[in-house]
Image (cartoon, rainbow, N blue to C red):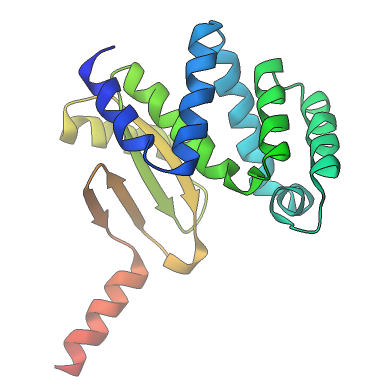
Length: 189
């Protein structure tokens, strides 16, 4: 294991989602199924962002373990997720940890990026970035950091505009919400 993977693993493994992510990542590497797992997780992450019903299944305390397990089994088949990811979803349902799924996906992606020698940049934007914007942002970050960059994208309309970029402990906040807040503070004197 190279040092960057070890550091990423140590940072990620600290939380609950990190422990699940590390377990899935290790299984995927062991079974030589990392690409399939990452593709399945990308599909799942997109579906979580688009489907209120799926969000309800993953977060509702009213859904029993058995109902959640049946739902994710059907979901895995319908979305043609790889078997390792499908089984993993069953474990999450059984342990009532489906609500952690977005964080687990983020952590698996970070482990995979570290394995490839990339650094992960968590980018929050008011609106979804186009493919062209993502490519341009990744190129700018690579030039500034001197390493390949994997983007972990989220949207938050509350920032109004601009971007918030987090790379490790560094944060660049060029959001309109922050700028307006700073202007308000300056006007108060």
